[in-house]
Image (cartoon, rainbow, N blue to C red):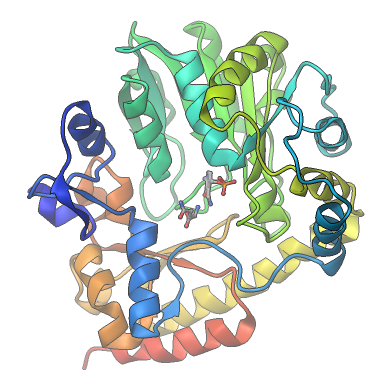
Length: 411
Ligand code: PMP
Ligand code: GLN
């Protein structure tokens, strides 16, 4: 298909040149006229702002995290904690991350050598890929994939190989995973709970990943930013907890989703000392350090009681239920998510064959914004008519969006 059909509207007017052209192409962001397109999240949030539509596109909550967390950051700023933090992150946060891994997963982590604080999970992903692969190496990811995976792999000069997850159950095809591995494969880049599908990898799927990793001597980077956002009692199992895996797993998470502070951009990497050293080398030349006053505030947040953690998931599950029910009522086919902020819905039963076209028209047709799933696919056909909607919103906002979407009813 033509690039123009699958990329968001052009964000820049000058053509992209040199090796950046290839990086933009591999990241699905090169427009047909050779200019760089904005990410789908930026395009759809701009569309929502321009039209006043209800924004169920970009995944950010419309209420902030608990007041105590916000007060903590204010106190740090007013308490003169506004200069560079240490390169690996403030000790209190590294200790809190290690304690979090012990408390929730029984993992023993050395906060001094096995934790690195990053500028959100996004920097963690980029720094891990750049540190751990050589140009020409292959990286295996699940498809659909979060957009920055494609960009990070391209920036590292590596090659993306994908393992399809298919609507509506989105289960991992273990044979496809094994088939995606070649002698050039260096890394598996996993994500669970999975954006955009909402699928949570179960123990059997994770055991299959572990078998493949051991058999081919691969490292696995696992992006677990939605680790606390699972529903219906489904348990998030970190890959690092599987027997024998701690040494080859690089775990990434972030404060943004758990504490509803996506703008703070505080993330972390947990891995062996050797891997953390390598990733730190890259991180120090990307941002050097980040988020000085926010780091101690996140350390305190991580220590919040179990009530906080279960409360977040319970509220989000109510949002999921309301949106899933509403989308079904409108006439979409829906994949009920087991976790994350997102639900994927098929617009084909409503007569809309192309999700990208629909998303661009949706503000006008119904006053709502969603994100087309096809932009996260190499096999565009597999996601052609699918739209991702975010339910990390207040109940009245979800109800309003559902009422508006009824305008899509054909008849
Ligand atoms: N990974 C996934 C799967 C995400 O959905 C997101 C953003 N929502 C990120 C990484 C980036 O996280 P951060 O905002 O902490 O950079
Ligand atoms: N992770 C958010 C989402 O999936 C968006 C973050 C971004 O805009 N890069 O919607």
